Length: 120
Picture 1 (cartoon, rainbow, N blue to C red):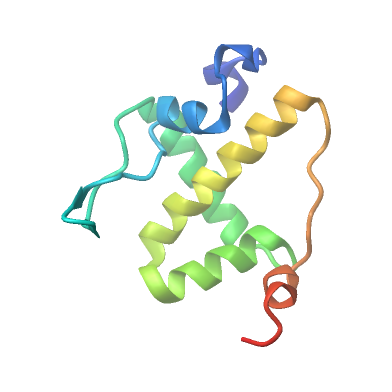
Picture 2 (picture 1 turned 90 degrees about the horizontal axis):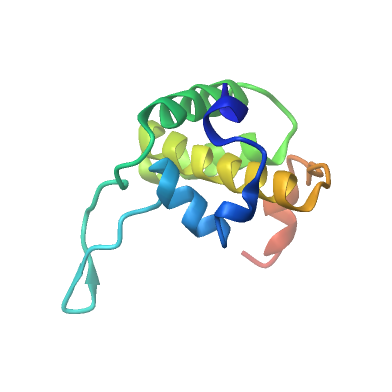
């Protein structure tokens, strides 16, 4: 379904940020006086966005991978639904890099985020 929506030619999108914006999973950027305010994700391709959120729900229930660990870290702070949208954005960026560079994705492991900042 994802490939049917986006195709395999990633040269249409200059960066992963452009691709996320087209898909409707770019984070909102609403500021006033240097303060970040609540905002919504951008409008985009609703069918692709719904498929990616379903994939994100499935990944969040899996174990021992970096995306599941990312979901659980974000869900604690932001809530489950916002964490799912953030995870769908991460999956979309991974898809962009896999299709544009023709390299498979490497799983970083469930303890990847724990290794980043050991002092914290």
